[in-house]
Length: 199
Image (cartoon, rainbow, N blue to C red):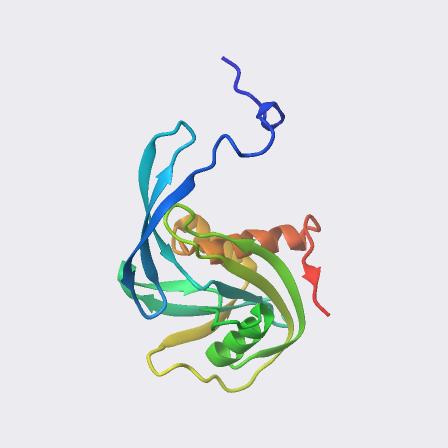
């Protein structure tokens, strides 16, 4: 049997949509909220959908003048592991996304950047969260003093792209935003993709 191609699919997504019938707030946390909705399925049956609402976040692919990538090592409690990641942070209410990226880079690493570009938006956990992460490219870095939050502890270091790709392939880097950023940077350096300049 030959599978269809994308062009063979029905136009639009109306035949896939689920419509909310009722909504229930299960839990309100510091910034995560848990919801349970009753939905109508495309075939007319009903189902329950539980999911987290998230304010959204930014991540920064910051490139030093020597080409190395600015990285962090931070302990992530839910998986009980110190993870290798690019700088990132959640949006404050009504905060401009670029302003958030600039703030997070400065707070976590002490660096500021003279050139900013937008790479792309990702949805890291589409099955149970509204979270999105906007990834930015930061270049023309100038070092300064970091200002970590009281409950924030991390190591800042730099690594060449080749090392990042090796860590991804070895399973040392499992963080989705960092994995996507590393592969994007590899394609960027080969002239296959371009970021969207800002300003």
